[in-house]
Image (tube, rainbow, N blue to C red; front, side, top):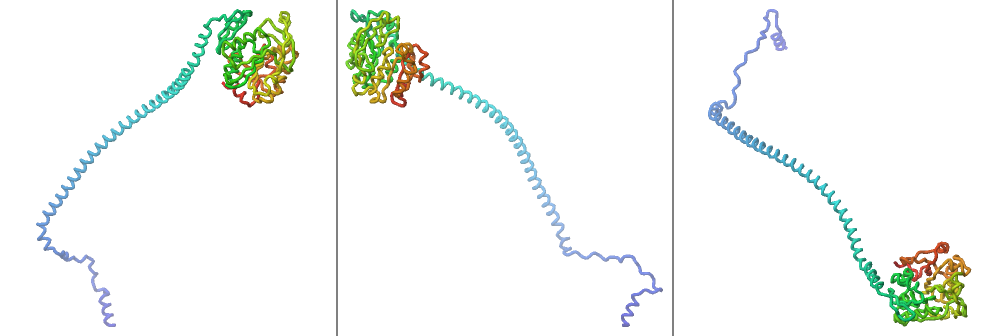
Length: 413
């Protein structure tokens, strides 16, 4: 305890003691650095080496930096050059694309023109293919029509047609002149063409009202020797020329009957006109009847002549007696479902025999036939009606059963 009091008393200032000095206590010498002697000894040797090292490293770096700057400058120049070339290339590509677009437009235009040329070329080729077909018949026509009329005998003149010679009586100069002025396809060229489409080799054909055989000749060449043509002509003068035509052209498969064809067998009055081809079982128009003469002829039915045999085509030109012929061939119609008939229709003839266009067409429709009117200029056939047919002076009507092979042949172009 005394020690503590003494210590405290030493520590506490007294009034008699002076104020303590606040000035800083002077520092002694700095402590010695370690290895000071070594440093002083090595400093003269190390300093030049350090300076040299710094200079060497600095020079090396500066050299590398200079080379790097040189390379960068070169790369910059190359970059500028590449950029310039890229710009030029881009401009060239733009120009090329523009030229490409123009080229595409030109090519498209050329393609369109080429397509037109190809189309025209195809048409020209088709025309060239058709030329022989166009000129051939015309050359044949010229050759045929240049041939003179041939005095065949004292009664007949031979006239060249497409299929051969027909003979016309000298006593009918107007008729001879008509044939001479007609084309080689005859007086009814459209009907000739239709018969050629309908008739195939080996078929049997009936030519009812054959006259001098203008269409008999066509039918005979269409059937050929393997076929059969049955021709009916009750008038003596045209029948005599029909026989001569058959002999002159060598048509041994054509048989001629001197009867008229009607609804029932018997004997009837036949009115012979002074206009060849106008004769009929019915009275003629007043002006012709006054100049006509009559004779009695045998009438047969087609059913009896065909007698159950095949018949493929029938041509009927009987000046108003068409429905009588149709009535006398009912059995033939039943046995031959694909039979085709070509019948002459004349509103004047129909009216003269007490019929109407409607009743005339109705009789064929009742037998299952569809009517087609023949264009005598082109040979084309178009469906027709009684009312439409009543507007013409005269026309040949083709009758076929719908859907049959005869209809397909008829409409074949």
